[in-house]
Every structure is written in structure tokens, then in C-alpha cells.
Length: 233
Ligand SMILES: Nc1ncnc2c1ncn2[C@@H]1O[C@H](COP(=O)(O)OP(=O)(O)OP(=O)(O)O)[C@@H](O)[C@H]1O
Ligand SMILES: [Mg+2]
Image (cartoon, rainbow, N blue to C red; front, top):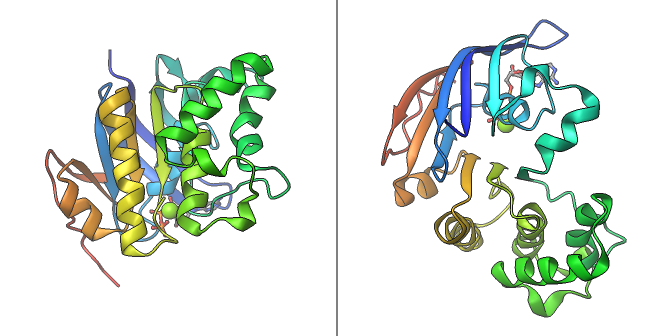
């Protein structure tokens, strides 16, 4: 079974704007996949359907055996604990330390402090931030803040890591470091990675599977692909 299986999926927002228009996509366990396409093509819409921030208006979205389109609000947690999400803006809690930010989700899942600690430390070690556990997000650089977000996303050892423009606010050198971390998670832990990006350099350097979206449909799907987007504006 595919980890992700999307069939004929459309999303029309309440205001009538089309986000996706009949998209098909299958992704296997362990894959590393870039989602590219010009602005407003539907990349973030696709990402939001995967973690059930939005529901499709048509079609099916299966993630880790869960039919996301039919998932009730009260069961969304079952999906969310299988995946981690990283965004462009870091969305860290400013009043919590690095440690507390990463531990937060595990606390809400009801884990004991003794179970939480090794997971948080492992995860911060993987992103290279074990020496910053007691500082607050405002005391970190942008790249470091994004590392905390990645640690938070992988702390419960999810099967899927979803990233929406994770390097969008970072300079090229820092972006490369962040991509090295994400690639190591895919390689060492076998975590499936799906990443929407505008970053041509990253896509061309990494030679991963590249899905191209245009006007809410898939127009390209290439193994070891490169950044080719039809820019109409
Ligand atoms: N919550 C929403 N309500 C209404 N329309 C929306 C909403 N979110 C997105 N859209 C519209 O859906 C279309 C696809 O948007 P989406 O955010 O998926 O694009 P994107 O490919 O991620 O673009 P970008 O590269 O700029 O991030 C756009 O026309 C956008 O205006
Ligand atoms: Mg987007």
C-alpha cells in the first residue's frame, strides 16, 4: 500500500476559488518528493489536505491508511500523530524554551516526562541544537529556529514529514544546512518527506522526485527531476 494515495482530488474554497482541480498522486514509504509550481498553483492546498487542515471537495486523500476526506474532527489527532509539519514562518511558542517547544506536542499526547525527555533530546541532537535547550526562540537565528521546528516535527518519530517552503525565509547557505538536516532524516530514519518549494537551487542540487503542479493539476512527475516551472506572469 502507498503511504499517500490521492485520487481525482479537487478543492474549491468557500469563496469559489479553486485550489486543486482533479489531482492524482501516489507516494511510497521512504520517498523524498518536491512539489513545485508557480504561485497559486495549489502546492499549499495539497499540503493542507495531507494534514487535514482543509478537506477536499471531491476525490480521495489517503495518508498512512487513513481516509483524510472522511476523517471526523474528533479523529484528526490519529492522523496528526503520524506526521510532522514544518512551515516557512516558524510558528514557535515565544514564551517556551527550545526544550519546551519540542516537548509540547508530546505533553498534549499525554506522555510522561520520563518518556518525553529522551525523545526531545534525541530530536534536538539530530538537528544539532542540543546545546540550546534552555534558550527562547527570540534568542536564536532563523536557521536555528527552523531546526527547532524540525525537531518538533520529528519528535514523535512520524512516518511522514511535510514541509511548506521551509527555507522560504532563509539565506542560501542556511537553506542548504536545513536541507542537509531534512535529507538526513529521510535517509537515516526512513521518514517520507514531501516538500513544497520555490527554491530552484535546492531542487536542482538534490535530484529527488519532482512533482509539478499547474492550476491545481499535476503536469509533471519526474524521478531525479529538476526545477522546471512554466511562469505565466
Ligand atoms: N483559505 C483559502 N480561501 C480561499 N482561497 C484560497 C485559500 N487558500 C488558498 N486559496 C487559493 O487557492 C489557490 C491555490 O493556493 P495555494 O496556497 O495552494 O498556492 P501555492 O501554490 O501554495 O502558492 P505559493 O507558491 O504562493 O505559496 C490560489 O488561487 C489561492 O488564492
Ligand atoms: Mg504556498
